[in-house]
Length: 111
Length: 116
Image (cartoon, rainbow over all chains, first blue to last red; front, side):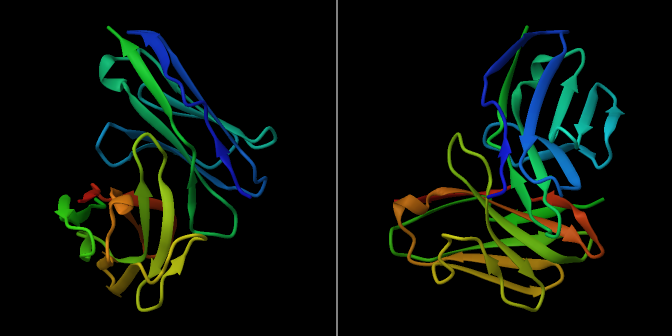
């Protein structure tokens, strides 16, 4: 059973702080990892994709991947109230086109 | 860009009726489309993978006779919920992958189905 796990939260951080979101996955053969943001009632929107070990930065967002430990994380710097949403981790397992989504972490940024 | 649309954005129907949801890739060709379902406060669950011109592959536990998927062209896939019941009420989201680029999926805006 291929699984993707996230802490459901809510994770509350004050405005301007760094929010750290974590995700673990079960299949060592996974190659592609994605972070999506989903506002209530809306479809997910892609924030970051990461394929190699290490860090990948895009504006206020940094994705970190550690394949040996089978985890991927997302850091949001200078968190804003508009960042309040559910963050979904998705993993594309090796040999398939399919994504497996985690249950999502609800982030609340307090003004 | 990579824009995916869905129609309708919301639909209310009576129990026992059938509902068709369309998913279109507007500016690219999508050889593979995916259909997800999301219940309140839950994550996206993949229902089926649809390839243009062939039968859809359904995930375990998804009734293929109830959720009919057709992917007749490189820009259009449809999901028909047959004999809908209140427990089918959910948020249905499609995604599409560009031909030759199977790592990324581009998501549509979703369709909210309410069955009375």
